[in-house]
Length: 234
Image 1 (cartoon, rainbow, N blue to C red):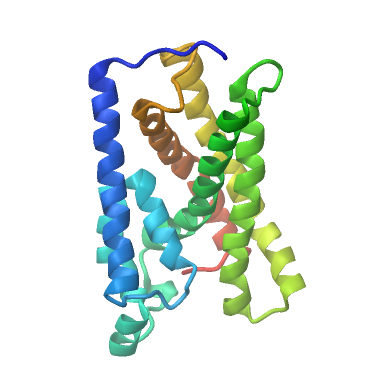
Image 2 (image 1 turned 120 degrees about the horizontal axis):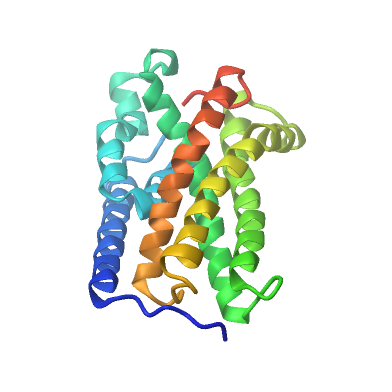
């Protein structure tokens, strides 16, 4: 086993608070969508919003109730479909990055626990194994999330949908993971060297912050992808 830095008590407590708030926000969105019936017109967004809340917490909750809920089937039946061309640019971009980030987030979480469970290392370091598996899992799930957006919107075949999803989201996923990996490297190799244990709440709070960093590094790439039409305006 590689040595780890034991987080200070207040940092661990802050980690538990951050995780509790994030899970509570995700749960509120899930209840609103699946219990109260505000299912999104584009069904994949039923997953995107709660997954985004796992790292953005109250910010994602605010965005969902202020903007995302307007695109639920119930809201659309009452008020009509919002025209993406009339929405503020930051609104469109937030959904585009969140869409990419949700697939990346689920892939990163799954890969992180797999590395921990089997004790994987690369070049003698678990962090490098994290990087490799995180990217592989994030790419697969990110492309899958994009596929379920493109196919219903463009009404294309499955094969065309896969090609379009790879084209639309690969650069976005790379950009998101660059920010995430930078954050992971900073808190594992610099701030908390030789690294926090994955069983600590502090580790996952740092992952939340790294995902937020990934959100911002993916923003300019998504802006370009939407502008040239490779990604859909939502």
